Picture 1 (tube, rainbow, N blue to C red):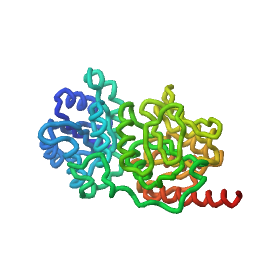
Picture 2 (tube, rainbow, N blue to C red):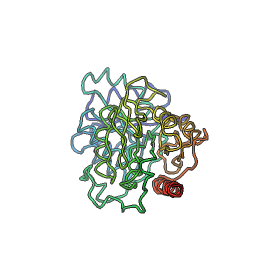
Picture 3 (spheres, one colour):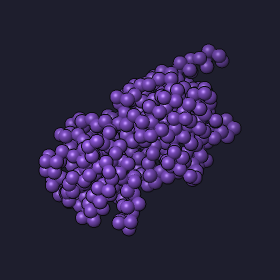
Picture 4 (cartoon, rainbow, N blue to C red):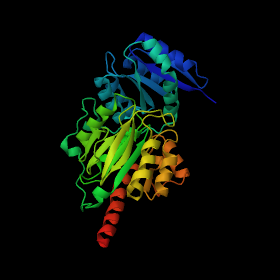
Length: 367
């Protein structure tokens, strides 16, 4: 079995050395080159033809985002970003994922040597996933150019859906689970939803410090309101609530209202937040009023709980293999018998709205 060939791009000699050492300790991968800036990296990529690149966000001569935008237009390949755990680092990382980076690792601000060694399993796991990810070429255009910001111009907003969903908006809840590739897949689904959509709860595997920036970015792009979930808040129609990184999100009932629960606790399926935790609460609390969506991601987190949702009367959809960056989580949900439909990403939102409108029609007939 050939080894995964990795080029490390980072302006810190220490980080280049640590990453090279971590990669070379793995039996299934090797660091074939390390570059201090993107211009050197460009030549290395041309000459060494690596399978995966690790790319620092902030570098001299050309920053990582400009380099990534050019790379994904001209020679798309799997990229794992290595970003600093700061607010600016989080904003830039979200931009990198939008441009097509497969995933990111947040490097510590202090104690780099010990911190990077502690992250070695996460780094090598993400390189393995990236080496198998489905990468698509970035289309040229103003929204993807290096000068683009994370805020949407009004013309990015999709046209309004009609007719209205009516009472179904307050009766139903939508639950979304996603991991690798999921930040952009979730964005695509949410941007297509109407302002009167049912309340949405989302667990996206993401570390602490990044979900606030991610929520703010989605809020600027969507016609629904998007925010990081807060413990005890009421789940409202036309709003999406994202599990804060490093905490679990679930739903509870309080009288006629649904309430978001944000809790600490042990990782579930090695994840915190975990899709399993959210989907189990959906099965228990929302039952037949739940709609489940499983998007791109590595592993099996949430598959069993999604089957519990279906058994409790929920309607469930999984993203199809062709449109996933990584098909792991949807595949496991499908294999568990949890899904009613398997759909391309671009069709999921419209299909859900059609399904909900048909439900609304049925409930109005009974009144």
